[in-house]
Image (cartoon, rainbow, N blue to C red; front, side, top):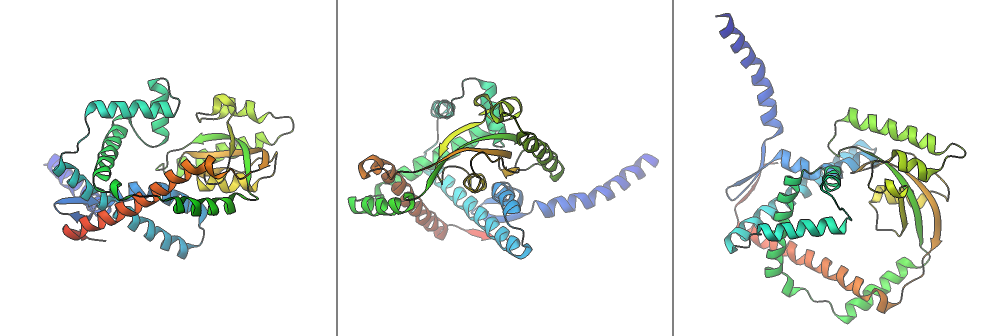
Length: 323
């Protein structure tokens, strides 16, 4: 009897937790017969929400931006569900051989030579090996669909390129490049607040140490940084605006030569930056950047046509949004 009563009490206590869990992970959209849970949306939005928390202090603006991010993440997931249905209908699946070739290419692009290093890189992005394979397989399937349905519409004319170069020249004139190093204290983008704060304090202590007279930032990065550039003393080389993540870039272009930053949060963790040098950027001639501009314009036009295609799919589908 006591055992039964204990079980009943436990069930009553747990019922509140279960109800709360159902509330937190409720269905927020139904796409044809497929559902999207709130947890999926929050996971997709997590990196942007983390950046928002660092950048926006006004509660009203933060709430407004958060709603916008959540809606954007939900719309993206709805679009992906619709595209996945098309991929299945058209038989555009990705073979294991194609997937392994793509994984090898990712490793090559990131200069990763062994499994442990690759796993560490994926962990810093919030993936396990299997989760990344699943993500990549879906991405490749969508790329096949885009190639079939959208790519033929994407055209870039010489006039488009010359207009883009004029804009590029205006942006580049008078700008600068920054040569920076950094020390990274890794923290998962979805880590609980106490772990984020522990990592921040560790980064803050490293920033204080880096500013001490006679301290060699490069050697400190080699010894303490948790990022892949640690072996090079945290060296990031020269970079222009638009290359690094926004939070990182804002600080890098604000610091003076020789200055060390306060900890800066990105999806990778907390960074301490040191600007080694700044130099003016010369505007490259048209022929030199033509290929880069063409690729950028093609990407922009492809994204626009993909958005139109998804809207067409959405109009033909049964999509019920519950938030």
